[in-house]
Each structure stands twice: as C-alpha cells, then as structure tokens.
Amino acid sequence: MPTLSEPIWLLIANTILFIVLGVIAAIRTGDTKWPFAFGFFSLLPATLILAWYGAGAEWRRIGICLLVAIYVARMLYTLLVWFNATGAAKLKDQSPRSALIGLPFVLVPVFCWLYPLPFFAAMDRTEGFGWFDGAALLCYGLGTVFHMGADLQKWRFKQEEANQGKLLRRGFWGMSRHPNYFGDFLIYCSFAIVSVWPWGLISPLVNLAQYFADAIPKNEKQSKARHNGAWDAYVRETPIFLPLGRPTAKAG
Image (tube, rainbow, N blue to C red; front, side, top):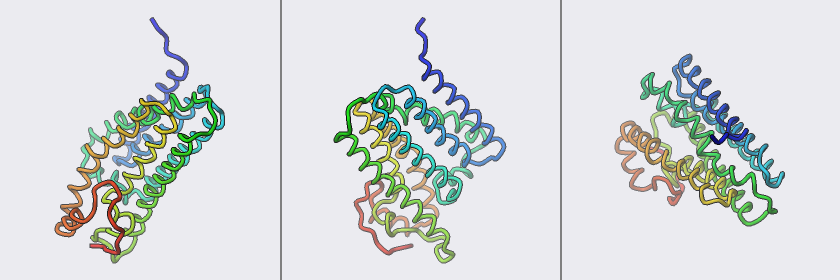
C-alpha cells in the first residue's frame, strides 16, 4: 500500500484543524464571519507547507509566500473590519444553522487544496525570473487594485449617512457590478501563471465557478429586491463581471 508523503499529511492536518476551528466558531457566534475567516487563513499555512518542501528556487518560494500572506492579511482585515460591506455578511440572515456549521467543510478544503494547487508546481520551479513571473506579478497587482479598491470604496460609501439605501455606481462599481470579485479572480490567475502548469488553472476556474454559481446570483437577487428600478438601470448600463463600463459619478 503506497504511503502519503509528509507534506500531504501536514496538509490533511491543516485541513482538519481549520475545519474544527471554523465549526466551533460557527456554533459559538452564529455568524458567517468566522467560518470565512478561518477558511481564508487556512490558505497561508497550506502555502507555507508547500514552500517548505518545495525543491525550487528559494526566492520564488519566499516571494509566493509573501504574496499569499499579503492576500490573506487583506482578506482577514476586510472580513473583520469591513464585514458589513462584504457578500459574506449577506449570507448571515439567509443561512440556516445547519448550513452555517457546514460552511467550514466546504471552505477549508477549497482553500487548503484547490486554491493553492498551482503551488504544487510553482514551488518546484528552479529557473530564474522570467516572463511568467513578471506576468504573475502584474496580474496579482492589478487584481489587488480592483479587489481592495472596490471593497474600500464600498465600505466608505456605506459610512456616509446620506448614502443609506442608495446604490453605489461610481468608480470601480461603475466599471463592473462585481469589481471586487473580478480582482479576486485575477489574483488566483496570478497563482496559476506563476505555476507554469496546466493543472494550475483549476485554482482560478474554481474561483470563477464559485462566483457565478453561488455568490453573484445571490448578490444580484438581493440587490434587485433592495434597489428595484435603480438596479435594473444599473444592470443595463454596467457589465456583470469584466470592468468594461465607464466610471461615473452616479449613485442611485
């Protein structure tokens, strides 16, 4: 019977640990915030494990870990400080207790195995800095601008009393109805690019499928119910995902 290698056992242990922590947090708080937070955080130790056992260039392994650490830190800040401006907050009132408790069983395996899948190959790359590394950095940077910028803009918009009940349609949100999701997708594309490995594409494709099969339909349905005619006009004038619209000064 074949034996599993040490890094695989560590990844399994990491998965079990964060599932348990996520379930405990869900039971104690009854909130979607903490299952999502533990899910995102589990990506970092998974990446560190793959980097430690990787046989590739040390600078690349360290660089990937730093980029993932920045991404995870930023997502945790968004979830814990700007939570009410995120899509995860909207799930709190929609999810029954059983679904809330089951959330870590879905999130953690995705963040421990599917999202870091490109790193199985990237951590073994021995060549020097090349076109794929440069393209990955560019994609990561652009994704961060859209992801963080859109979330920051939404959070600031919601802090203004005069904007309560209004629809944000300017800046990033005038370019796309889901610019933060687009930015997140680009970040996972950057992970696939740096892997130079066809199977690495699974990571951004899973991210894209999660958005279009779950997060975006739920968000669009809620927004239509909340904003009525203003939302219909927004849909007609603004692309759903790709930032092909023109930034405006509108708020409806």
